[in-house]
Image (tube, rainbow, N blue to C red; front, top):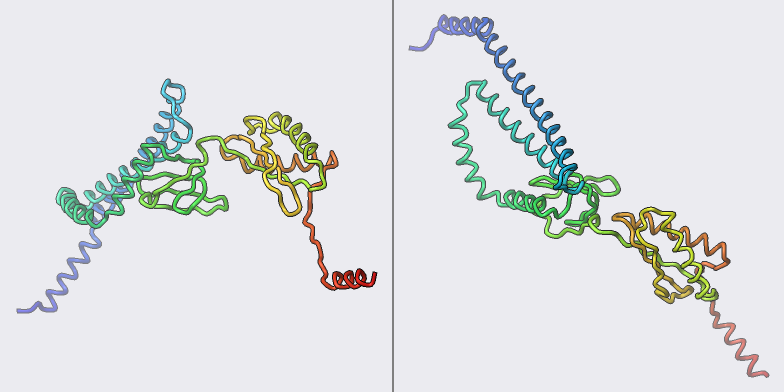
Length: 301
């Protein structure tokens, strides 16, 4: 037989008693307190772990086995990320246990599901393997200026799955490691600043070269990033209205743009002081009518 109205009323009354009774709220309070304790401990462990990692690398600087600042920043961030993932996962499992869920069967099911998903997640596996070799082989590090996957900029972060590269205009590009097939690293070795200087055809090339050579000897004392005295290679090109002289200078990594601008300014000021003209575009106008009139005058003569 079906339930009567009295039965429904009794059930509703029991539910109200359970909902308003102290037992439910005590369980909720205990669960909320346990969750708060777990989250707090996880936060403290992450902060403490990152601090210990930083202290470890700081002490390593004074040890016999030193690593570069670039690699130190990369490994410190990587260890921080791994610690964060591990602690958050552990805290999540503990919170599930707080709600009374059995974690053993859940993890076993997750393992089987993960194995099935893994066959279809080959790109994820490729990203992780590529990220491991990027870090292991020190292909590039945090702070390096690189070009890869059509992106050029400074490396902000290197992870096992993705890398973050910030372009000089401020955009942050997140690139899956599996897409990194070729990398150009501008920050490992010294850079070369290349400067082309134009001299007018009417100018004295030998005198201009002597003035520039005199100037180049002074520049390393004035600009610290210049490692050696810049070299004047000679005439690089004969343009439409100028003779192009080329200057090259070895500078510290990533300083070639700034030093190239500095060399151009110094050369321009010195040539102006010595009366050497920097050429400007010239245009010769040719009139066919003038040619016809000149031919008539020649015939009359």
